[in-house]
Image (cartoon, one colour):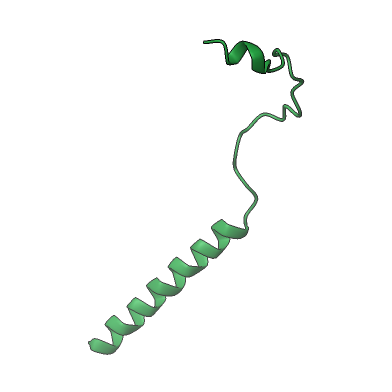
Length: 53
């Protein structure tokens, strides 16, 4: 009885480890859009106007 519980525990441990390894080394499933580099459309920082207030 104790041997069967030990074998079941070992089998569970090995299946958990293999699932984790498969998750780490599998391709990503992120659905982020490929947008690339975005151009700067703001205004440059002006130090003298920021110090006035």
